[in-house]
Image 1 (cartoon, rainbow, N blue to C red):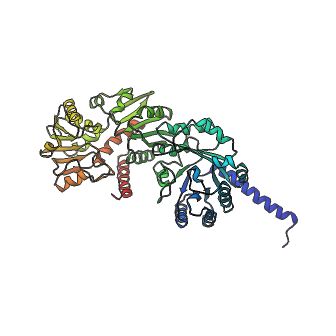
Image 2: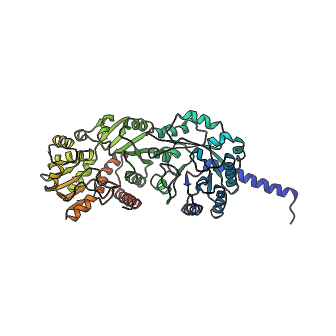
Image 3: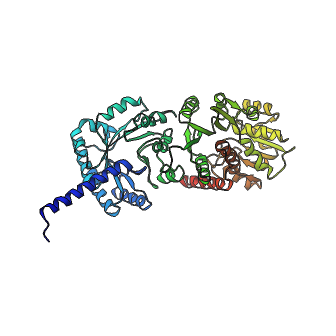
Length: 530
């Protein structure tokens, strides 16, 4: 069959319009989560890409600069897209001068990226340093792929508007601005660019563990997409987590602009299972909420409150090392928490920050399920926020409380405050108590085999408030000596239920939260081989 002369032109025209429409669609609706694949072995790169695509991921970044021969990257992209043609591939080949791994020239870098586009990559990431130097090369990619111009600052988070002005001088489909968070408020400094430039497509992130919240909040606050690691490989930047966590725990691809924000502050915070538990509870109750981990160093509480006000944060859990120091930043604290001198729950009501201590109920309820507390002899190990909660709560219940720990002055001060007796660790280990409540970080992940006591556990009923790992060194030693034990997960669930109701005004789903806590602990132990 012979086509009319105009037929070929019409076919080419339709193909051109199809490509144009495809690019427009991608520009306007890229998937919210991009899987960053930075692997040095080509076979492993393809293996991980296939695994993620088979799991339903549709947006993958191929870091070609990680490969020993980046010029072979386009063929890998072509091979992958033959198998998964519905996937969107973002090609990156960052030069070593800009914290990448490619040692070639700018011309060679652009040749590789052009080859990636010819192989089917529908987006390219070009660092601003290259784009400023080779504008003609960048323009040559316009209309053929989504061009993302990127800026990275590995030292901190500078003033953002000068950075934005620099970026906008180079035309592109989207701009990626990535800084390093040194304090909590750095998250908002970078994310706030979306509010100041609502018509510009932006990818906004802060690296580091402190910057993790920005990775989840980015898309809900106007960002085009965010990054995650593949399920079985390391990420390409500090603070990344795997896509499964981003989707299942944080629902980063489904959050609405009306989402209410909550969280936990701690240092360290990576071990916390609170995000998994509270987010699962909000999903079960169909609440439009998000609970995040915030790494807050001891001297960063003031900065955190500035961040919390502007986000805005509606409530947060407080754990080591902030339970006592945070009192000075609160507008109202209930009487028991004032006596305890420690707060583990903060929420905002009528514009005021209010604090309470749900650890008290978390300690008392599991014990009262097993015994009466009146006149029982109790040894509390520790002198921090959790220990204070236990000491005051048990003293109020009529128990005879003794305090031990490794800081004699603080032990004596706590014993005097709650009407108990101070005792040295050596003397405590040689004594006998009806109940032992352990409230120090000893035995906490990732040091789960450590134990405060060296040989003998001096309590018949042993309650370890450490909940990660599930079976601590203390629990195992106590059971080996015939003691009855209570794992820390029981305390955690009790206090979390009360927190959830204070945060949301809705009763927490106990069974859901307990299951989520156990699963999170098991997953954590699986990751560490514990």
